[in-house]
Amino acid sequence: MIVCVAVVGHQNNPLYIQSFTEADDALKLHHIVHCSLDVVDERVNNPKKSGPTLNETFLGLLYPTENYKVYGYLTNTKVKFILVTTDLDVRDVDVRNFFRRFHAAYVDAVSNPFHVPGKKITSRTFAERVSNIVKSFGLSSTG
Amino acid sequence: MGREVSESCIDSLLTEMVSSYCNRFYANKPELAARRIEAIGYQVGHQLSERYTMERPRFSDHLEAIKFICKDFWSELFKKQIDNLKTNHRGTFVLQDNRFRWLARMSLDPTAEEGVPQDPAALAESKAAQAMSMYLYFPCGIIRGALSNLGIPCAVSADISNLPACSFVVRIKA
Image (cartoon, rainbow over all chains, first blue to last red; front, side):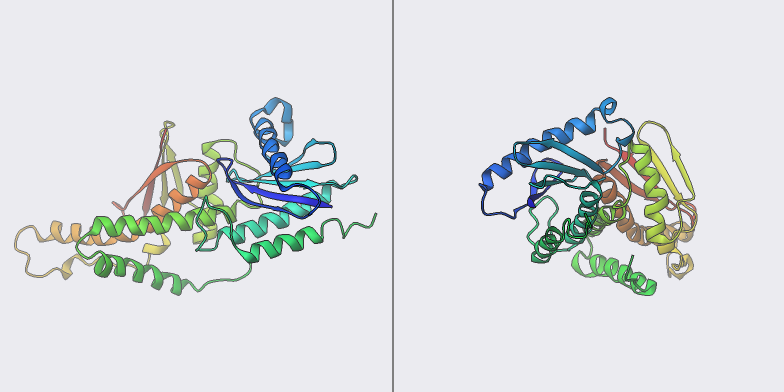
């Protein structure tokens, strides 16, 4: 189950952060997202470790914490998408799929002429699309 | 990509935008009009670069980003690629389009100037060139916005010394 998704700008400023669970403290989830930004920077700036996947947008599993798995995605415009999930068996293809749809929703939100680049995304349509994508995460898997 | 836009609508919109800013909003202040038009182009380029880089892996250096502008980005906007790319390898790139689409239907008529006694040809030509240069601030802004969004701050200017070819000079800020 996805507990949190976040969009972080190129100066590590939060553009959108949404948690999907009432159980956990929102602050704790924000903290996890914040820590994962360091991992993203390390992955991108360390070419020897990353190898052939250096320029891919999908960064994969960033780091596992006690209960969560954190996945990262870095666009060409240096915008980071962070996904925090509690699932134990997450398929790589599901996460990639998720990020692809999330990226499409983000591009549509940013193309809104009333959106100010660098400020938080306040579009309700974006929030609805994101919650739809989150709801259908992993549902298409046939096990 | 989904929905399409009529090209004549784009042409009319651009013509009207330049006309409004130059003749109504900032009449007699062409520098301010130019800055406003370029700022609009900046926002458009910013948003377009977000959309057109969606499916591709990240660029490893400035040259790859410039090549993206010359090939894919220009193809999406103008249905053709940049014809010639030159660089001095020190942060300046010249993108030459041999038939820039947004200027293609404009005619320069220097003989339309009346009653100018001395050096009529040069004077008329510079006025026409100045009028035409107003239409170039928008594409310059688009290029600047797209490159800025890709992490490359720069200054973009246009050069129309040999029409119908149009060159865009991109100077990357260090």
